[in-house]
Image 1 (cartoon, one colour):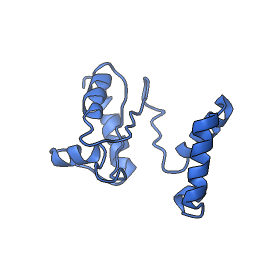
Image 2 (spheres, one colour; image 1 turned 60 degrees about the vertical axis):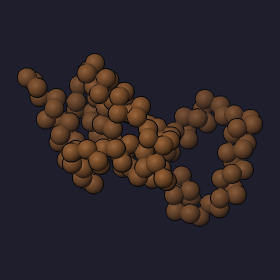
Image 3 (cartoon, one colour; image 1 turned 180 degrees about the vertical axis):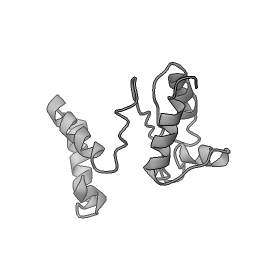
Image 4 (spheres, helix red, strand yellow; image 1 turned 90 degrees about the vertical axis):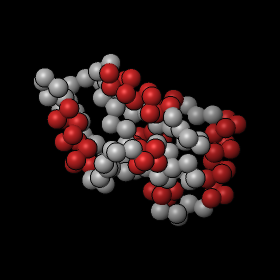
Length: 126
């Protein structure tokens, strides 16, 4: 992952890897290893002190991705913790960040406010 994120692995090597995965597939162990590497290639929120299931809904984007804006509140209403971490790294569509940015929701770059808000929302009586 480091080579992909820092640009030391050329695009043609990534393309060859993706073609091989498409044609041959990956074992469960390879998929797990790749997922773990992707997970730890950035910051990881620690929500282990919050009770209940925690999930992430990731989208490949698409113009006007509205699925996330429906699925996350439904899951949250069922008691599932859905932090909905989003970014603008999805080229023209901007992922879920753009529609959220147009709403009145305030966003911050630090994870601390996100974690604090989630802990506040989990207080008894809320």
